[in-house]
Image (tube, rainbow, N blue to C red; front, side, top):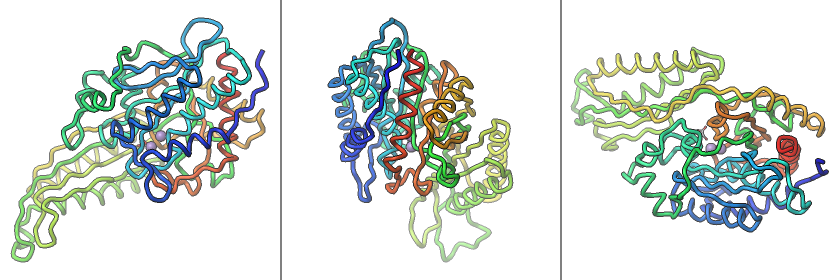
Length: 409
Ligand code: GLV
Ligand code: MN
Ligand code: MN
């Protein structure tokens, strides 16, 4: 029989606060880039909580940490997962909410002395953000077999440190084989990180899927010369090319319209001096769309534009794909279950696709998967100002609890 459980957002918020003290930065946010000292400390704390709650903890070869609470019957668990790494200017809820909500649910089950029929696991995955090591969702991708372990371990950051070396250094190169378990179902509670729920005045987002993501890095090689003496027609200006690509990214998103978004998040120029034409630029382009065809159109347009631009300016442009994920649809039965449960709980809800990437998208092709969103104040995320009110966290936790109780039955 399903018990009448109510998890406590107070305790969850205290854990969020404690975790936010690790890698804290001005303004209330966090900087916990994957596999840094801060990531290690955060991992140590969450792993300790898992152990204290009686979970059986396993660490796999890509450093994913899974804590399992046994069920009445043997077999794969229902898994709740997300991440505890952050971007360098991260908020305290992104990822953390989903992992710590899982622990809160476990503690609530422990207090009620209730053993679910099927096992329940809470996981945090390595390097969801992908800003230090690309691609994002690395740990969950390896877990679900869409990225090879060897390739992931060999990935290097800008300082030539590899994922494998850094996992060893922080003590999270685990012994357990990756991708041996396909969960019975996978759930992720996450902050929306966008403005839709707040604007509509709804408390819960029923996530229908995740849009496709395409990240490309371009390295432009031109010629440095004097800013005052070099006639415009004789320039091979990497700085100009970087700026033109940035402008084209905005134009193509405006012209393709619909869901298309485009971002140039990195621009580095060398030698980066006021009176020297740049001979080198590194820039990144992030293109996303809910429709694969349209994402491919955006990619093709960018590729053609850059080829023409490089020829006219007389520069070399080398490109490298950093991440590429097709759009993902979540399981209709799980989506319906979350929606029905949210309605039964009495929260205003709406369906929406996710604009951000999430670990759940790596599970979606392999097991019934769904996500629950709670609103982000001002639609702000990847920013220290990221905030979700306690009452909304409470609602998300409530829906997660009731959905998990049904899926573990
Ligand atoms: C991950 O946070 C992403 O969507 O970039
Ligand atoms: Mn996240
Ligand atoms: Mn994020």
